[in-house]
Image (cartoon, rainbow, N blue to C red):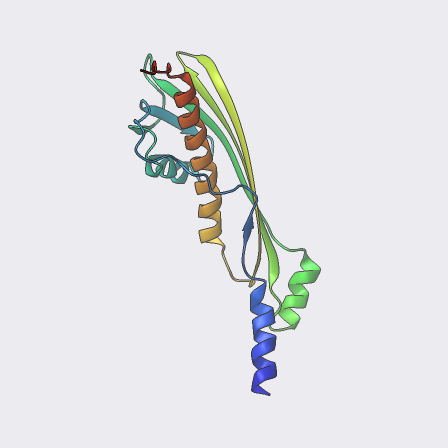
Length: 174
């Protein structure tokens, strides 16, 4: 009896891991800092998180909020993070089983980064990260949402770092 109960509980809990479509970007440590950037995010809810993750990446010498001064780099971000909840019939089925049946909880994040200097667009970046997870009804999914936005911010920092490395002149070999 205990074995059957343990096996049933293991099967129910086995599906509660989340998957992300955007791989966790590797950022080269020990590189020179990029010049400061000013970041404006159109999302009040997630703007601070995104700026903090850009700071934590260690790629930029400074990440500021607001508009950039003359000659500085401005990054405009259009961020859309939508949580999708399971349909109503599945909610009722989960409630009928006393919430033993986990529900699929999805988070879809799309971000458009526009890098500008002195009003001229230098480059545009687009990132999408889709997270799928089976969770209990009352699970708010806060760690997964934060991880979703962190991956988008790190992908942008990695791409900016790579673009900066590509624009540096090659040193002559001796």
